[in-house]
Length: 178
Image (cartoon, rainbow, N blue to C red; front, top):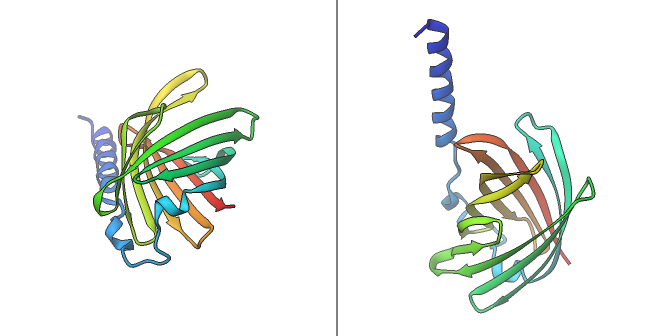
């Protein structure tokens, strides 16, 4: 292998290795206030506003979401209606299940398999694979999704998107409970 190619390969392997080590730990937020109760916060109608940024940080899409959410016991539904800056619309309906010890699972039509999440303190973290339509094609992308309750009505959300471990971009979103 040529020296330049070897150097590039080692640099890429190091970067990928460091990216895997750089993940947050949900336990870090265990004592943060206000305490997030998903079934309380995601109950009723919420408005959300967000952007998708590419790897360079450039805004690729802006969007708003109206969410109608309700819970019955340990089962929750989040009915989301997205409107994008280019005028396109999208709907996603999440079906959530609250498990023991702050754990949750979730399903939606465009989510492959089951999302799994965990709540501690003011924070909720979950992971899932989404079937994402882009320019007439469907891509399976992984989401590493973090939500932080800021107060009774406001939550901030930051999600990293990746495919095969390579970062594609981020979604930044703010929720406002009516």
